[in-house]
Length: 138
Image (cartoon, rainbow, N blue to C red):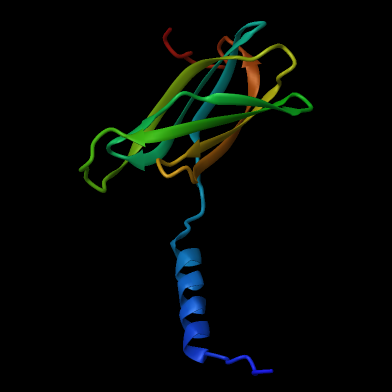
């Protein structure tokens, strides 16, 4: 039976490629100015900012029940132009979500256009009022 051939060059190449892929992954940023305001028993207004590209635009959020009063909110983003500067700017997000009275906290993930986590944050849901600040426009 032939002996397996060990190819050090292939092993080194694989190690370099895996190392480069790991180095390219950047840690997720944080959300800023996060507020989750209960407008009525079935609706929560969510707003925040995150550091994103000058041509990056938030898409439609999704809400999944994580149990224990926690809702996982995912906000995808997309590029608004094929060619854009690499400038990093604050990107604003505001939406009203259908979220019943059992929700007390939102855990939020913003996804970059490639579907990878770009920014993370969390917000306790408070009644709309002075503690909530301005709510998003309808």
